[in-house]
Image 1 (cartoon, one colour):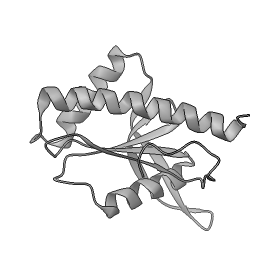
Image 2 (tube, helix red, strand yellow):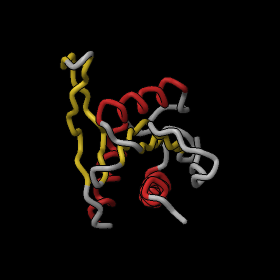
Image 3 (cartoon, one colour):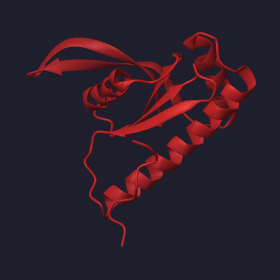
Image 4 (tube, helix red, strand yellow):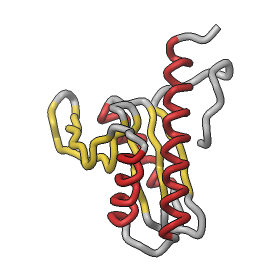
Length: 142
């Protein structure tokens, strides 16, 4: 029997897979070597074609002990439940993953996706801010 948390997780992973597929199409057509905004614009065109709702550069407050101490701009927020952080670097590193997890915490969104268009192939990683047990569905990629 699937509980509500597992159901949400499955839906989030399905959405992430769609976005990864769209990212692969963009990378296949453009290749590597462009700046991040070029990939972002192409990705937005594909999201519009797929009729997937998103917000670009959505602003979230960062709080410290209840006081706003800054803001951050999420590259993309898909359907108000998936933060997509875009990169055009040689390879993703730990700092990129940490950045996304911090964004998830600040935005109070549970699921995130890193897409890196900078390499020969599209590189992607999913991140969550919730701990899942072994009984929960497996992650796409950690």
